[in-house]
Image (tube, rainbow, N blue to C red; front, side, top):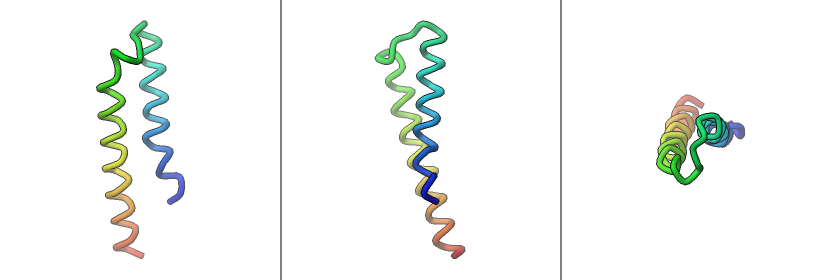
Length: 55
């Protein structure tokens, strides 16, 4: 459960590597970071809720 915070961090790392590989700036990929963080936090909330309900 404590590793759930790694989901958005790892996805952001992959997004940054993708941007660098395609020669784009971090500023150009800012919207992607926002989506990744939002979706990652949503996934974390859902997983925590499911773990809480089934415990």
